[in-house]
Image (cartoon, rainbow, N blue to C red):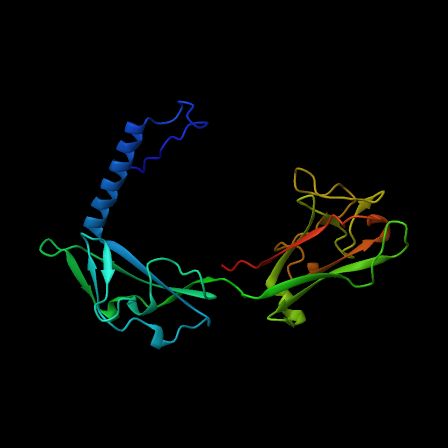
Length: 258
């Protein structure tokens, strides 16, 4: 049976969605299908544990037998109610999260299944939350400039972890996007100067590109600015208002890993 989706309608209580009875029938049929599949091919159990290092030592592995109760849908460990720190839900704390899993099949004679420690898969790193205390400060390297001034300044992102600035090479580990009004600003590809017209900063159009002659989006991609170049950009004084806040923001993200 294919998965059945509930029709929620166009708006709240507008009569265009499924009735309560139809919705209930879909829910029951979906659960019956899940029960049939789990009964025939087994049930996959996943456990998670967080740790502050990227390699989980053997001392953190499961070393005690556990019991899964099919009727109660519950995993227990008589010798340690905490499952040795492993849990069914992804933990909220800790930088690294590891997962172990097992496929268990119900028995026609018993509602419970004993799982031995060696039957679990080896721990796999599934999440890296990054640093807990990472801060970014934007500084005007050449000093503050305003609309009526001459010259320019460099806007530079300075990243620190636990109060210590990162090395220059570490800036390559992040992707950068400078935006104005929620749209990437346009910059010169070579000089990284912000493009502007009569003091108004140029941003990308609805098609995601910059107007001809005004550079390219200030956004890290595999093709452009992939080595941390956008940790800083340059802006002329005549693009900076004399009062208020400079309408440019920076978003920094960890590079996605395959």
